[in-house]
Image (cartoon, rainbow, N blue to C red; front, side, top):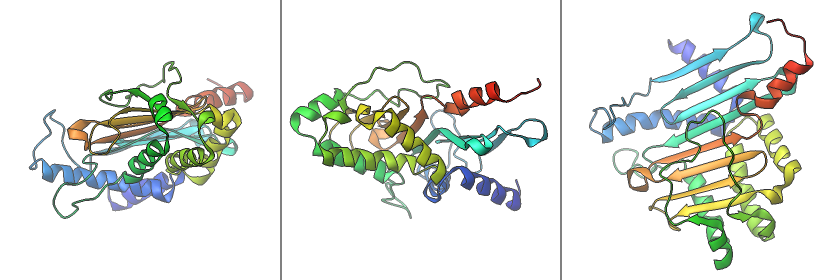
Length: 271
């Protein structure tokens, strides 16, 4: 793309993401240059090229540009999927963001932590739990090596595990909301509001907070927030616990999901 086309691509990105979300995208892309420097300018051990320009925009449109339509912006450590349903709003899911390194160890950006809040708020919640609650929340002594959903197009059945919000104190529930709102806040305000409203309607108390791995930073750890409509996953295992993967999955409407099917069932379409 030329400069004008890139500007237009980021303008589109800003229709699906909040200012913070768009800032995270730019930060993830910039980290590719940092990672290339840390690796000596060579390809990664798996042969991957660290290139801040190796990101892609894909558009999915029907005849005449009518709704529904969608787009995807993705590359290393980034996958933003948006389905626009016109008057019915938009679905921003799945929304995957990662950071490598999670904490820049050296160079001009030494100490930078792009996804610091996602880690810090979760540890604060974990340490607010009493010993019995913490034991209930901890589902494994070791992490699973990555987020469990990985790149699955559909999230398979997953049992609720960990500590239910219903068994948390008011202060603990407030902290859980802060963490959940942090992830939702990556989306544009209208999309985030709808997601949070659906979570409340399904029962905030039915959310489960689950933890695996170490109970202190800089060692491998994983957590998830799982409810009837949403799954948030965070993993920091790789690269000696300095490599974060996070994802927001809409368990009913990933890639437009049921809303898209309902739209087609209610509106006449020619195939």
